Length: 235
Image 1 (tube, rainbow, N blue to C red):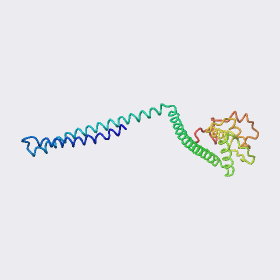
Image 2: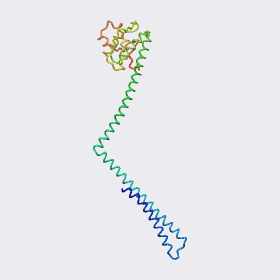
Image 3: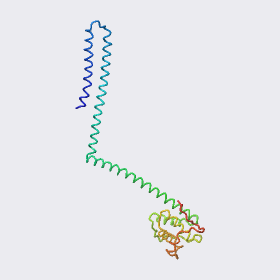
Image 4: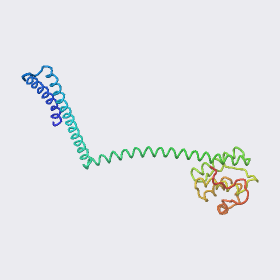
């Protein structure tokens, strides 16, 4: 209602300017000795002056109305947020937004983690292939070793597979194979017990007469020269 009142006021002022100018014209014509050409100039000056005050007045009215409207809107917002129901609604919206962002971040994290795990496993299997190709193991044997390694690092358990048969070679020692098992286990923070069981099960022909305790005790050998050395940086 107040805003409508302020919007009508400029129109009233405009009408008053026109009325004042008209009345001044009549008065100037009645002045004795008033030159005719001076009347339009005087009226123009008066009109411009009144118009100037009119512009200033409407500008002030506009600012006043806008300011009051902004304050009113701000007050309404403050009241809404101060109200318990308003706070609860805001909290709910924030929770929904947080949940949405969290789910997206979680999905992104899981995808990134899966990608990293796949790359890590690929590097481990490549290390395995390269190691045993260098030692002249055949393709079937290397495939079996890779499958045992894959299961071992994925499940942190030993693959109980009776079909696994890796032929013993005299140039490959127990120490070399234990070093290999330790290198793999180290990359995944797998315990020495599991690493010992892995090497015994995978390379059974080398350890058929060796106890678990012996293998576990000397799982890692850094002295001497061996065909498979201890390497913490195989990736």
